[in-house]
Image (cartoon, rainbow, N blue to C red; front, side, top):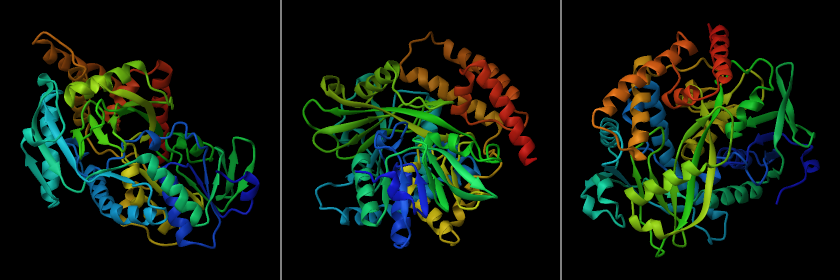
Length: 490
């Protein structure tokens, strides 16, 4: 249930966005400031939201790639994920203490990472090795185990796993239960839920005044937090002077599904491959009542689309049936979901305050928002309360020049490998000499596109692919955008 807009006339803080990031900030701020009136703004349907469709893996190490560890900013991003992982036990305990004990937020405690015969050999081997390296450097509990000892799996022999890595303490949560728990805790802390979307942020003389809703109502507030996921870009663009000072946010569409397994069984752990094919790897997450979550695809779109295509659903199901368990073919589909992940144009989060007093941004988290949410909220609530925040998040402040973490050559190599991995995972059947030729010929168009976009900056690989297959007018708009950003910061 949501309160009416009229009940919010005396708001002090408005959090725009009722996904996991917005609600986590709302809960933490309301608990820290019981005398302050806080509202979370967002419609219950959460159109374009990432959280409802999320597998909700708490994957600090399972998400690691060789590409991530190859850059200083990538390693810093990984360090944040490790910090966030330590916060989850206490955070879950506090949320569940506000309930009646009827629902458990956590669905599994551990993860098994599989290296199988599907995908691009060099990419998959490097990413599996990178996960092992990160675990060893952090002295995190893990063990490489025999593939035959992995519970539940029964893949097609042509897609069989070659190696398996058990990661202790890296489990998952149920995103739906988490959202309900956050809403309950927020209300118990005195927060107000308002079923409306914001369309405009109003400012005057460098200060935040409030937001305008899609119903045309103006809600005044001295502080506004933009945690609207992939829709954050539209709100930021309504603030004069900020559009080219905050890296642009796009939509990383992920398609997933909830499945009732053929016999009500499921694995005791998260099962996943390493990241590949521009996505977070194939993963299967246990849920309650004999169901499992299967995810996820990834398609970076220049505008939010919020729906699943038939091609994406067929691809996802084929991957799960062949790579994890053949009997999934006889299971029932409970729900197909599409989530819009907020992807920043440079691949790094946008977290913190802006040059407009009282305006805060939490976006650009891509696939890491849910996992990082307790840590990000702690940082932003500290800043909003006049505190120092967390120093490790300072360089990911929203108003900044584009982070250039990788060279153009490294990005182009990544584009080619992930594009080829997509084909192998479908799977395609090609004459033996074709893959090498395709890798050679793919580099040319992507290198030409990078030259057209900017002399000084190369977008991340997945965004490069989205731009490559976008309409010519969208490409021209981005060329102009990069020019504007360069002039703004240089």
